[in-house]
Length: 293
Image (cartoon, rainbow, N blue to C red; front, side):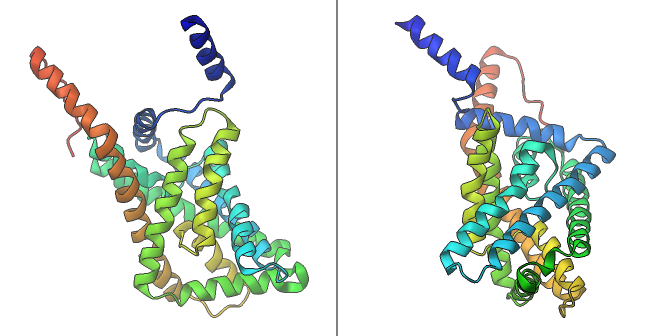
């Protein structure tokens, strides 16, 4: 009987039907964050551009769904969220560096495995290159004539989305950013539990659909919406862009780093480190090799 059980476990692991447990996810996320923090500049920059482009493609799909006036309010939001999930699926499965997902680097920073300088370097470079990728995608979409679909309703919807975002009060933009990235980082967290592409895609779809349907704010997606609307002639400039994106970035950092990364660090990583130090103390060997910040 034990042999059969072990055999079933081995087969499940081989075929990819079992997921990593939360404590294993914490270990995997922290390890990957260390790798991300140490990534060469050129590699990080190129992957950042790709992530911005991927999110832009997801936003493009969302706009297409939202332009269909025959859909009811809830159906439009939910289907739009499903379409937008394309962006994060591409980031996770194809490989790219997304600022909002990289807010989970806070776990490795809290554990002392990533320095403050490495954390800030990653966030700044990835944020800037995400902007390049998202803006570039907006320009390509505009040049393609895509916005003329559905009798021009797609373009009109793109303008409507950006104008609504520009009119959000700062406080609302901030807290919508908090809630958005809590869900995005939960999607990334759960994707690390998966062993197959299917596992990862399913883990991503529901949290992303939820934040889009609820109207929460994703800073990188907004870096696609605003330039596209400006190209279409919307009365939107740098001041309107900053009015939205600055508080949304701040909210995204709080939602991803604090509500997800730091919370899971306290639950899974910090107790493990405390146990290791306790064992080392009893054995007379020091094992605390945390990086100096």
